[in-house]
Length: 145
Image 1 (cartoon, helix red, strand yellow):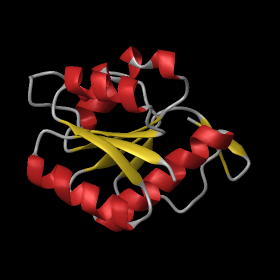
Image 2 (cartoon, one colour; image 1 turned 90 degrees about the horizontal axis):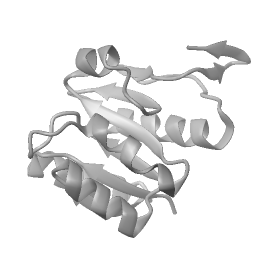
Image 3 (tube, helix red, strand yellow; image 1 turned 60 degrees about the vertical axis):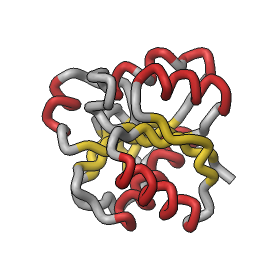
């Protein structure tokens, strides 16, 4: 069972996301609202995947988190944000992003793709609406990026 850390400053969205992911067979190993809380939780619980909002409760940015977790090895990073333009302009570390608002089915498919990217460096189609890859991967046998 893959462990997911949710980093989201809106408690309602965080709880709904947790309920959905648990129902899909993921283990939610924590919910964090700030950069520092997310880093502490990740270092304690060693998640396989991160679902990160960009703007967080402490005024920090979710984009700060992956760079602080390199000691944990390869973690799949999916940004779930309404600030996709900011994310893309800043060259954020991570695998992919999913634009808010999104359907939970699209979140599930996005996490499946990110999991595949971590395991193989490949991403299979179809991509959900509002999904974008942040780094070069192989899609259908051709490098994308």
